[in-house]
Image (cartoon, rainbow, N blue to C red; front, side, top):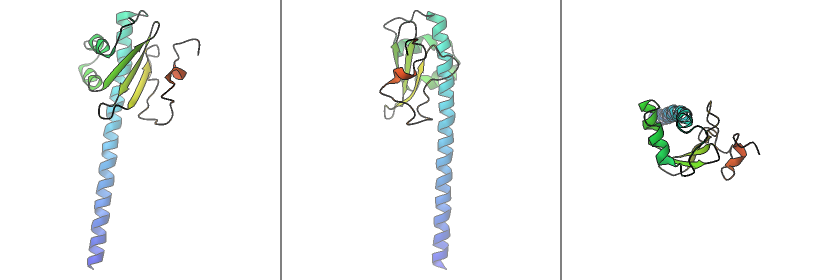
Length: 143
């Protein structure tokens, strides 16, 4: 009888643990969706500010300054909570978003594709060659 009670308790603990992991995963997906929306709105804001004359010294800090009052405050705060790097190209930029905890790339986006994020790395790990992001550059007509 004691073995049966112990076994039932173990099953209950496993089920509770599994359900809590699923909830965390869903929460992460929701935040990531909000991050992707913020990135998309930000591209439009930066293009509105600079057009196709992105300064060569444009960086993550400048990016956040430009978008701060041009996107919803919640979107800005989500965006600002991540490590951001911007690589200016001729007339557009590549935005790289890193997880601040482990500095892993979780998203990349070329600014000319304002309708969706180009590289949702977090949602599709292993799909992208992170050492050759230029392969996904739809802005550069030479690809």
